[in-house]
Length: 231
View 1: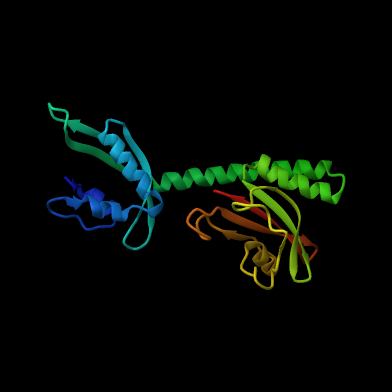
View 2: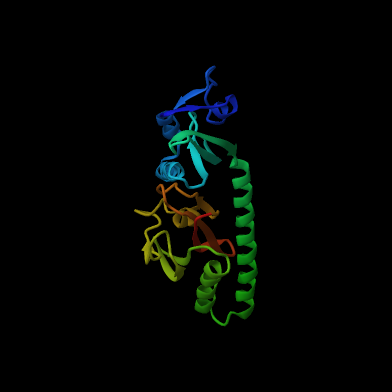
């Protein structure tokens, strides 16, 4: 059967009004699953019907567009002939827990990176070595996927040091921060003089987060440190 029996609480969890009979179609349920998690959920359900344990975390999209994170646990019951008779499960909203865990990871990343940066400054012997070591510290100690430093030169931002994976590829050699690349976080950080954050997924479904930090010399912004990471 493609019909589900939901509790009132589960309807509310999905942002839907409860139905007196608790009836919910499987297709309607799938439609509420975040597109990035839908195939994985279908695979987990099929594996559970074949006998595997069903424990899954996934995202849903509410009717108002809000995204929530849920955790399911389920068990398949079979009749005497081994045919699937029913599938019973529980669902818990773990959105707040996931957000708190992510905030803790980010804080730990920041602390490790700050500590490593202080170590780099203490042992720096020249400017180029300082920039390269700082990028390596961001990736190797902070746990981010990539980092690069760009210096402002007229209307371009030129990469002078880089380490790791910059958003799925190598760091750009240069950005036209007043032209074609004006919306890049590094360009925005230079123009505003403030940190600029592009959250995960804003530049595409699987895109990483991008954080650009302006580099200052007294009152002048002369460059930017750009950091990439899933968190």
